[in-house]
Image (cartoon, one colour):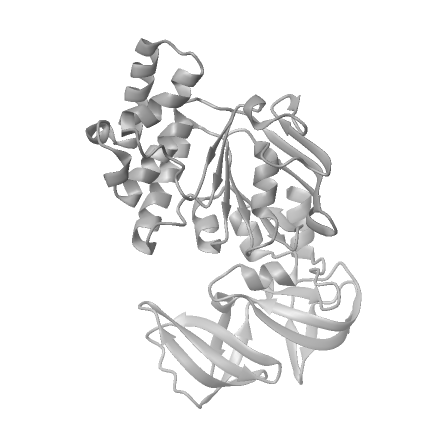
Length: 365
């Protein structure tokens, strides 16, 4: 397996820029997620790593080699597509054997390698079955087997679970992550599903309109969003975003939200004008008394918790609270925010303002 380094990678199609100045590193053995909405540039980035698209500019390093202008066949990677890409006229064994036979491997070695991969993926019982009669899950295992059997430097996967139903997707996601861990593989995985990315990934790149919005661990991306886009895209429900006008001096530890003073992490960055206060629903509690109030619009029961939606003077806000708390539609409640979990954004640029908390994290990172 190998480290993959992307440096100032760009891809243009005529006047359209699909990927703009992307830079990040995928460490050897990482399960790395390229996450974002449709059209954000994540699949184009994956195809450039694979060699299926050549970059307009920038560099791609796989291991010790700069491969930006090499064809896919020279990069020693394996690509797993959403639609399986199996040979329908061959059975499972022949689908797994074909990449090795094409490389000139001796037949006894091919047989041993296929048996090894079939055991890893638990498909030994279907080796002689035609792929056309297999379930979606089994076909996906065979597609993974075709990639694994070659022992490539990296696995590249373009929404490989997208064709499966929701229940089986979750099961296959767990299996795929466990398989990655057993093989200590370098895996680059494209998805639009933020829950899938959070569940499976060691690191996540969040892309939007061809630009890398944030790069970090799932916890960093969730807890400390770098931009308004990430704050709104990551999380279920998304982060509460409450616009307000104000001035923040270096060293400030509170802001005025309407007539209420809200505690925030100590600020290391000065700001003035249109700002946004962001806080996750799980960091909002409801009290009987307090300055910042809202009217309950709805409550969604989720078993051990409930999501309460409130109308406030700065838009709607959601709170994730215990399901045992009695809350009635139409009543007034005071919103209490966990000060250490608040992020402030510049509304014009969309960028998060630096706080003492984020400053410590950046120093430690």
